[in-house]
Amino acid sequence: MNGHWHNSRFEALTAAELYAVLQLRQDIFVVEQACVYRDLDGLDAESWHMRCVSGEQALAYQRCLPPGLSYPESSLGRIVVATSTRGTGLGRELVQRGIDFNLAQWPGAGIAIGAQAYLRSFYASVGFVAAGEPYLEDGIFHIHMQFKPG
Image (spheres, helix red, strand yellow):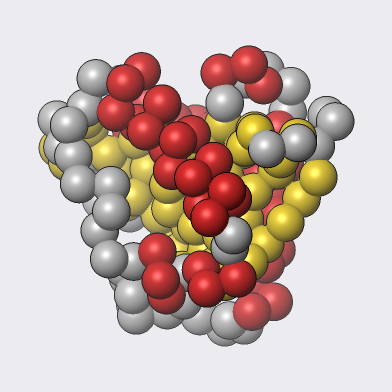
């Protein structure tokens, strides 16, 4: 993949970087998935923003959240890959980079996610296990998952 990886605190993002991230999130989570929800949930300012970019375009993105912000554990959220880069392994690389970052940044805290239920097997393939039953959030079934290394 011809992209460059960056991981920044919110306050270090330029206006153009933030715009590209928000545009990707809206393109997929709102338009493609036809889901009206509050994307700007107040958690961006406390998160790290990991992204793969090509020029000004965000190809993949996720938030790395500290323990206690969304869950008692650290977490990954807003995990998204541009339509044009799906099937290239970029999503797997993105999530693995997020796991590695969170484990190094907050050792011993664990990692939790609220995954879209249809992606359960994908997240299981990188070490997450389901922790509960699927639940409806913003009209889409999700499942709580926790990272179990090894």
